[in-house]
Amino acid sequence: MASSSRQRRLRINVGLKVAAMVIFFEVLMITAYTIVTNLIIDEQAVARVLNLSQQNLIAIVLIASLVLAGYLTYMVITRIFSPVSELARVTERLMAGDLDVRLDIRTGDELEVLAERFNAMAAALKAERASLENKVHERTKALEAAQRQELERQNDVLKLKDEFLFVAAHELRTPVTSIRWSLESVSDREMSKEIRQAFEDAMNASKNLSTLVEDLLNMARLDARRIPFKKEFVNLVEAARSALKELGPIAEKKKVHLAVEAPEGLVPMALADERRVNEVLVNLVSNAVKYNRQGGHVTVKVSREEPYMRYDVTDDGPGIPTEEQHHLFEKFWRAKTSGAVEGSGLGLFITKRLVEGMNGIISFESVPGERTTFTVRLPVAKS
Image 1 (cartoon, rainbow, N blue to C red):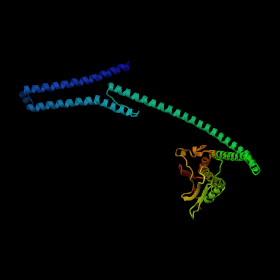
Image 2 (tube, rainbow, N blue to C red):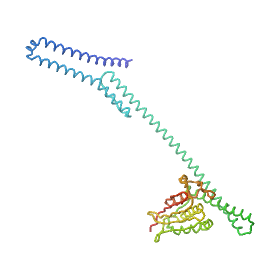
Image 3 (spheres, rainbow, N blue to C red):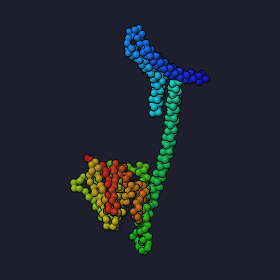
Image 4 (cartoon, rainbow, N blue to C red):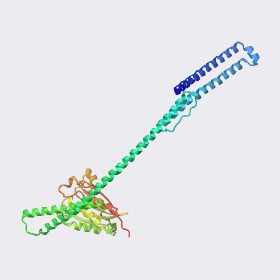
């Protein structure tokens, strides 16, 4: 009730101020008009009393009126218009997000009440924003904790998966090797044509199974970081020749020509793991042979590209379709053009991981229908 009464009183005060200013201005104009009119009527009497001319008297009256009118205008601006302008300016700052802004209006009327309400609103908005920020912070912390728990759970699952895969592949390798040895032990015996065909099919299946088990074991080791990488001097030319010699029988069956190229005087020493380099080369050359055409060519070119030693494995096979190239190093992925060629889809995935484990880089370039080149860069061995 007291507040309502105060607001009514203040509203009345503003009304009185405006009314008083208007009345004062009207009285001022009427007074000035009356004085000027009387001066014109009785100009000789006034002139004698003040010893002034008619024109000077009129000028004095008008100047006094203008001064009083200017003062009245100043009062209107400072007491009414200026606070309103300040309110508009501060409102713009509030809308821009500055909740610390405050109005300081001491007019003793409803403009002062409006300023107080504005300050209370700004303070409430600031408190609400602080409350929301606290809630967001708490929710963010809770979400981060939940994400950490989920990541930990996923890591535990991945560890279990890797451990299972490692154990399963390791346990499978022994019986698969036994099957292969048993088949090889009877390979030189006399067999009928039908039995020989079945025997060869079984040999091929055992080889593919052995390769799959070995790939799974290598993948599990890489995921579990159980493959150690040595740092030793590796002659890439000799490593390439060794890989081609190992794959010679496979290339001979398909009539694919293998070759190693290197510039004269090249010192082909890389700082890497010799065993892993051989695995990478065998995998890349093996793929180049398997996916090549009859009578094709596979070339391993060794060169130096500071700060790396580089080798390029190039074949003139069918290439890799452009729309499938971004999948090339993915786990268990095989190109649609692989056809009847046996494979696990792990070879290039493992190759990439082995190269990166030796601080190297692997890339490729394929022109469908013409050629494919895999490029491996390994750190130069500096004596």
